[in-house]
Image (cartoon, rainbow over all chains, first blue to last red; front, side, top):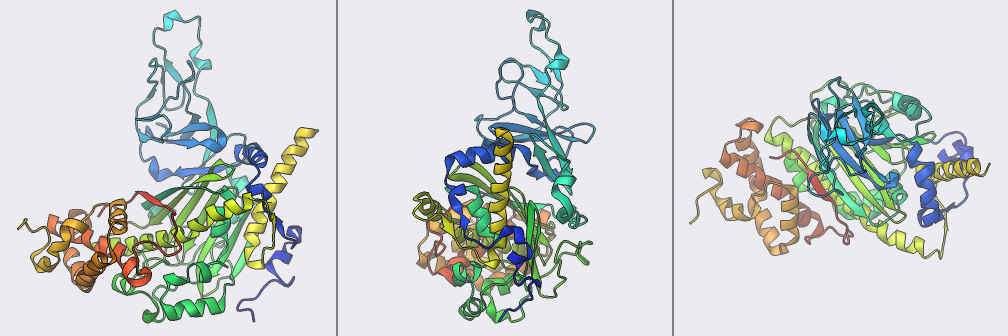
Length: 421
Length: 111
């Protein structure tokens, strides 16, 4: 007996008939040649989130990103005009990496007035213009205007910084209606950030798969809950409130996130003591913009709404919790069977020790769950790589996975078809 | 006897201060993983009942202007959160079904 209504087509998946209902081929997660195609067909021509504006508070604030999937390193910097720009991190003289601290392969951040190459002291201003050549007279008529840093398209949506090596459309066109319906969420109030990173021995899509369905939650995570609650959850299984595809992007809207819980005995003692848990602090922050929420969030306007997870193609997840905080996940491929996972949890800055500890409990609990989510990935990768089985039946609550793998396949096919012409 | 680092009202927790007054999650997680369940239980049993009073003490001060003793107490409650996961649900230092998964906290607002 379903707990929540599905579309008239009978299922969420059939509501989007282009998806089909056949088993899904996971060769896309183990084939090195396919990964090389993903790099050019998807990552080089998609808008990719590389951070938030709060990381660049002042003129000259910068950070670098080491992006193996783009075979490059980028500098993201705020200019005196307030504009955020992105450049390939390469000196135009002889190709030295321009900005790094102790080790050239590690990301760095800071504030500067200009960039000076460690090798021969060539200098570039914050707009990428070459301003100084050491012993300029030794060169043979180098026109400094022709030797600025190589710029990369960079734009900002709701405080999120995106870059695109080969943009075919603007950032807002790319993000589309789903993102439009999120605008106005008080991201700017939620500036207290907890950042996690992990190197994961799996294809990037497998971790998105793990977070984009909650079918696993009552099973994999059942030991996280107190016993009675865990049994109840496994008995219910999982059904989302709502799914929405706005290709290439998608979202799932879910119940849960009762904070405070209806029955305090159903949560752990530490949660009662600190009035917080996985879903976030029970006491909502006193800020504007959470009620009413923008239209894309809790789209079914369900009173039992708890969380929405938006998958912005290809590798950026934006997840909202009802109690007034949000997370982002970025999945950065480094090889067909490896990626760097980054999670950021954003809260309204705590005003008291009590509020700080409520946020800490939510954050620590998040990690306990993510460790369980993460442990399945390397084992899955190794078994997919055996290629004993390559097609897998996905259920209706796994529609976002089906959609992700289809969009990836479609984009790669478009690219290879165009290249063949 | 080393010098007290916690507020006088929390002298019963002083034996845990040297081990558990830690500034970052990375240190707290490492300490948790390097501890026995007996050590984690002992800290939890002593510290958990005092959380309410600890919040009351710390909240007498602004978060960005905590005196040293309150700052240490706040760090100790941060560690109690870490330990509570093991004592209340896992009954072991590691996450059940976490295998060898790793997730490093690399930035955080510091208590």
